[in-house]
Image 1 (cartoon, rainbow, N blue to C red):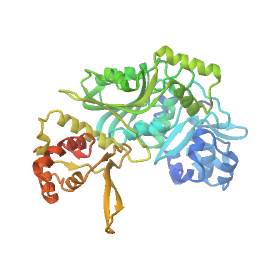
Image 2 (cartoon, rainbow, N blue to C red):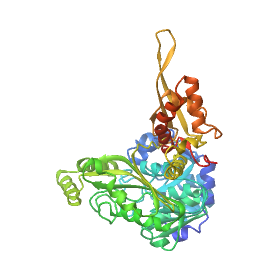
Image 3 (tube, rainbow, N blue to C red):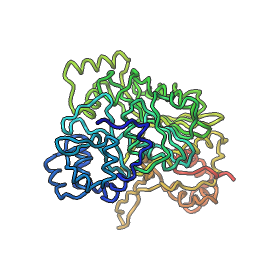
Image 4 (tube, one colour):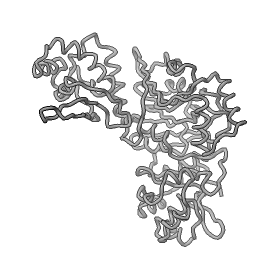
Length: 495
């Protein structure tokens, strides 16, 4: 039985299933004895996993049915989900009868206090990857979540919502979330996930790009499109009908027209180019004159040969044969792609003189979200673009709450300890480390929002026996760097 169409799914009451999952503690702890990464990759030792879940508890039944994709008895399923929950799962097509028992059509996984819905890995039980295959939460999903700003807003658009993870996260800080996709099966999975997470403010629509929201504007647009640059139809579910980087170019060019003033676009993407040094040029051309401030991020740069290995192995767990490899390389040559950069684009709609910056960054999705840091960077850049030379010294900034300092000490000849280096970084997925000398470290202890940078530096100079004017002159570029990396908060710092 196929999944119920998402249009009908959105009106279904899935709360009995949610209640059963919560009561059974079907959460991250449920994966403690089973490697969830292996489940997602289809590399699980099924015999060991079945032994781990042999106690007959509701949670073990849920793991077997929804995580491992194995058949369970109707009696076990009813004990796990209750009569009402089992009826909902059956009516929506999430589970179906097979070989005298019940099996799941899709996988329901607990991830970071949320429930996600996806197709089972094609390598888990030899399941074929069809054209409408729905991917789950992977590294790119988490990176986009890390890089998304999350102020309280009215309207959010999740463009290419897939299984709906970004929409579910956005629903916690938005009055309304619209999720769009060209894949009806993905929208059905997203509708189930919305119900399982009790997110009633998500509106799902079928259509390409901005067609389903043609006349609407938003405070935030998030998008994790199928951005891999690979030959058409070679990797189902991670490619688009667009050639090369045309899809992400369309999104970058059209998104500003759907943003309200002050609204953000947060998008992952990739693009091709020639020399290593010209990696920012294509995305810069996409956002030029768009009425937005722009932060273009480079995460990784690959040669065509590296793309053939990385993309194929990550999504199909297999290598290309010689003929396939030559086809891939010919495709990149046709595009004129000597290199492919994987990164992100963040835009903020703002009237006035706009700025663009391009940085090489390495997000670490195992650390806390960086949305607050990104907002601070955008606010600081806008302020700095209006300041006269030296005017930053009159600011009364505070430190970002995400700042951490790491120091290295070395034993001194007299038996004491000397600081030999210090690094400032953020506690978030965007760490942006910066070497700091003693003057800056002392300055940071004085930034209370009351003292100007000028007065604080003069105090530091006096305490260290240095010339105040020389300290002011030497530290100004470093202060601008601190602001541009989001370590200082300039908003409200100029009373």
